[in-house]
Structures are given as C-alpha cells and as structure tokens.
Image (tube, rainbow, N blue to C red; front, top):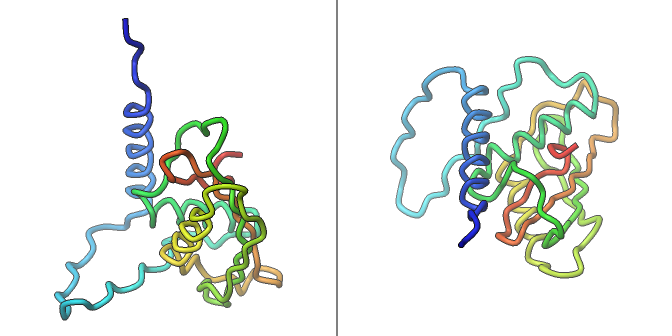
Length: 161
C-alpha cells in the first residue's frame, strides 16, 4: 500500500495562498502592457500597494517579505518549512529613500547549495522597490533570511514567525 504524496498538495496550497495574498493587494484591473521591441526588458514592478505605510521596521520587514513572495510566485512556498532545509542564506538589504535597493550584502552563505545566494539576490531585485522608507529611522537597512527547500524554492523567514 502506497502512502499519500504530500508535495503536490502542499505546492497547491502554497500557490492558493500566494494567489489569495496577491488578490488582496490588487486595486482593480491593470492596464494592458504595451508591446515593446523584441529583446527589451519588461518594466520594473510597481512599488507595493500598501494602503498604510509601515509604522515600524518590523511592519516594513513583514511587508517586504510579502512583496518578495508576490514578486516571485514560482520561486517561493508558503507551507510548512521542511526539515532539514537545503540552504539558509541571509542578506542585508540597504535601501534608498524610495525603497529601491541601494546595496545587497551577503551576511551568511550556506554550507551547501551556494547557488541559493544568487537566487535570493535575484528575488530581492525582482521584488524591489519595497516602498518608501523616509518616515522610518535610519539606517535604511534590514536583514532577510531565506529558507530554501530541496526544490530551491524559498520562504522569507519573516513569514514563518
């Protein structure tokens, strides 16, 4: 007798949660993108549509983690964290006043699966800008811990607390 395979069920649940989170942040239909020249890069994603700016760095980090998932739906998971994890890179993200990324520093490299560092950096760049930080105390820097599973999908640790 074969046990039930839970990975597809968890993956489906993670996609459903990601879609639900994305739907909560939408403010109506978006205009159709204009066709561009072949080989042109797509426009950068818009800043997160937060109705209320974060009142603290803790709130801002939570919004940034949600933005990471929203901007990287095929590269993230929201379900239970597997044990043991494949890799846990940690990035220090320095922001400009408008929430765009000024600098990314690798605070912790994993002992294996070193490519996950590049995957995490690329995910941050795709998700930026994260929203205005002028109202928050300086320095405009925060850390994000990326919990990578065996499928090289990540979950921001901020969403696992």
